[in-house]
Image 1: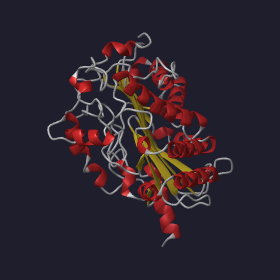
Image 2: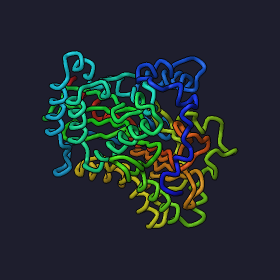
Image 3: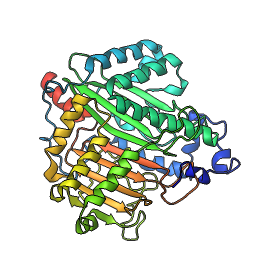
Image 4: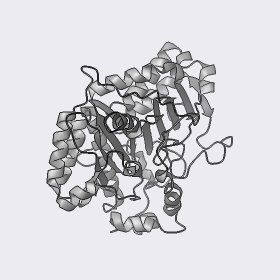
Length: 417
């Protein structure tokens, strides 16, 4: 499809989807979204109880494997940039007033970690909302993200935020869709010496959870999405999202022999009559590991990666490396080694077509990683079947180390008996 083809699907300015939200801010929209009988209200009521469950972790069969995430010191060259992160976190705390410091700070194992969400409506107001903070707080929050992530990862986060602001400008809803429609929270005491702490950024189409302990970094869950998946006007014109993740998925399918391609394709259509009831969620669509799914059982599907031809295996690993690219170089090397060590237990599955103009869903899954990509229906664009303009991606660490929780629990048992 041609560049900016998404503009064919813009709602007219007087359409109720747009007109009814003109001039509304995040807090007013939160109340509107919760209303009984609305689409968003039903989503919220479905998600609300899930985050309150005691955290276990995503598994493939309901049985937690506690041996998978053993906390050991980081190898030389694989340490997280903890000193720079702690300094940036302190500057963020210094930039806040007393009320802001109280709001942003939570215990390292607080349930608030699990309140992140990716829709445009604010379900939980965890931490501080950047759009209502002064510029120096916004700058300090972004500096913490930048100090923690790889340069490429930081740019990915900023791209999602800028696309969100661009969408707000295009549809005229800057009050609920802007570059700083994001909450930031801190967990634990920022410490350069080894004790666990971390931060969280979440809002529309961008959620990142980052924890460090003993020089190790756990990055996830991560949700990155975009509608539209390009910026075609203004100072950031030419910015695109997910080009590599989409192309790499297609490369996996192209590298598979026909019988494995058929086995990988668990459903031929994005909404397939063969799907069981509930397989397409009204909010998550085909995603299984999105917000509030911290304890979900997600069975392996598709093709075992170890049985693929070498070219296809390499393409799957390229997909995974693209998803873990937000990690700094050292922690990324450690994460990729962990994932490669479980290649015999890694599966790849696909939904939809795999031609050059097709939309699709794919998932790479093992006991230590879940990476999902899905093409979605329109939300602020007017179409009700998946098209290339709205993309969601999710990265998780199964078996209990989302939010670094497995490591935190080991550290607490070892240091705080």
